[in-house]
Picture 1 (cartoon, rainbow, N blue to C red):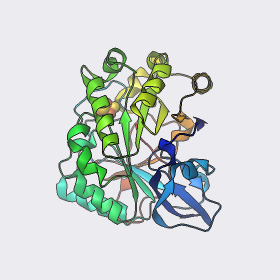
Picture 2 (cartoon, helix red, strand yellow):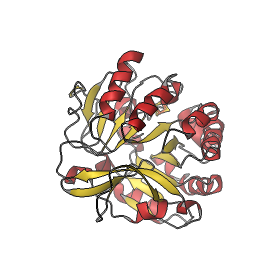
Picture 3 (tube, rainbow, N blue to C red):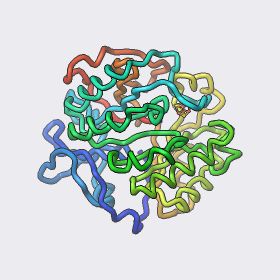
Picture 4 (tube, rainbow, N blue to C red):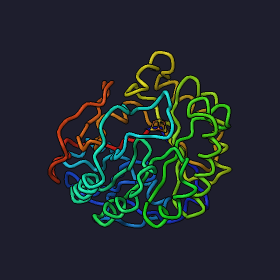
Length: 325
Ligand code: SF4
């Protein structure tokens, strides 16, 4: 993952990470970025508060190189429904969802599976009424927990999330209403920005996630400036993945990785760390789908396939890395 980083006052705060051992190595999972770091220190275990600067200074390690069958982290998509209809969406919204009781069982299984972190995504997870209860189960199980959202419902739900989650990731695909709303629908920019402000007001470490496409690339410098003005803790630039509904855009919107790295390198430095997640970085991540099936992504995936049901707490192998869209 390519990163440009600067040190700021906001960066000195302590944040909760997930700590443990993989393949005999002490590792730290950062719920803000989804990255895994090698500690090189005596092993910490479970949810641990560390200084932001201390976390980002640790060397990154691709989780699938750690040689252990349990993923460091998973993305759990407990819902496929969404209030938006973005053409670049990774999801196949025709898929089934488990009911409330079965969702609670999946949360309990993930919580006791040994993963260090969970990113709760979707669909739009803030549409789930009992989301705070599910998050409590994951946190009580020792996981570092983030939520990935389009931000629409954050203003009304940020207070409840503030005492539960360790990070929020909000999708923003342009620096202004014109450019963002083209992809995420009319009025969605204003709601997402309100959501970011609400999350920050409740003290939640907050990251902006933006999908890099040919049509959004020119807006990246202004988006990073906006991120700095808002006071978020980082920006992750996600290479668009040709999966789900977004598979139809592939030829027209794909940006080569070398060009994406050039775009990041050309950004005027701000106090906000900017990271690039390439398609290769996303390969190997493990998803628990809304129907309870486990899905491991690969570099060539173009469909959200099922591997097996999450029937047992040890059924999350093979090793994977974070996924979020
Ligand atoms: S990309 Fe996110 S916000 Fe847009 S439709 Fe898909 S799940 Fe909803």
